Image 1 (cartoon, one colour):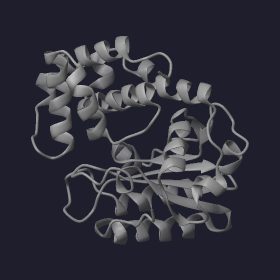
Image 2: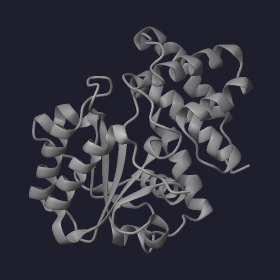
Image 3: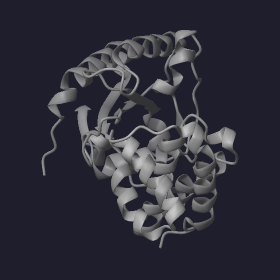
Length: 262
């Protein structure tokens, strides 16, 4: 099946590609569109997910230019009818072929960093197990906006390293402070991790929620259902009030998510 860029995001992805190409120049190897735009369909609060693969590390000037100019192309979720939030991850090809574990990312742009970027604060290159999951998703479903198709560039992740990458985020969420402000995304991320470890496949956040809901006790199902409805743009919730329920859901999920692929 031939995938195509959703018309609603064509202008924004074109602008992002022009910017990335201009800033990275000859070091650019590929840009891939992945995530909801190509798998499962864009939802009201879906980001536009781009993976940028380069051959040389970013200079500090390149990092600053990308961060500042991507900020002008991106909008916080729900803030604009025409423009979506961008999530742009930049990786060195030498981190991926051959694989380095954990791989490092050169840069990541996202709306959660808007305040820091506005103040001229940019994250440095750093190790990130999530790159393993991104490449796995991209090998499964993606569109090359620049460069070759994913299967010609990247190699699959060994199962043991994929398991490590899936379970690594669970250690991040230890208390209410760790989930506050990102409640419904974390609930849906846990559903996706649970789905992947149980089935060996990746799916969208709302599809993972549909799969998990019938298996949960009523109270936990209610929290997941609320997160799903917010993600789909069907109902806004006061997550400050729901925070205790979210913490209980996180604790329950961490205790019941499989420790190995089933």
